[in-house]
Amino acid sequence: MAEVAGMTSNGFNYTAEYLGAVHDSVYWSATFRLNGIYRGMRHGRVFEVSELSSTELQVAIQDDIEDTWVNEH
Image 1: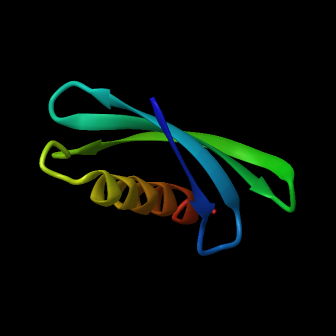
Image 2 (image 1 turned 90 degrees about the vertical axis):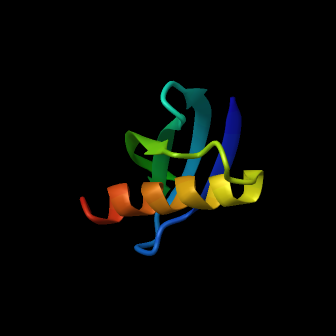
């Protein structure tokens, strides 16, 4: 299991863990906070990751987290 953290474009900080899954994918789970106050949790999956470098993988996960959270809030 690995971790990634960041901030969404609408100002929420998040910490996430991700783990390799079946069918060339990773599963992630993220916790979101705004001004240090818990605001929610989301999870998702990114596919076709076997040929990505570790940096590219983290960017792909962060992009998916951004899309999942911002499109909902």
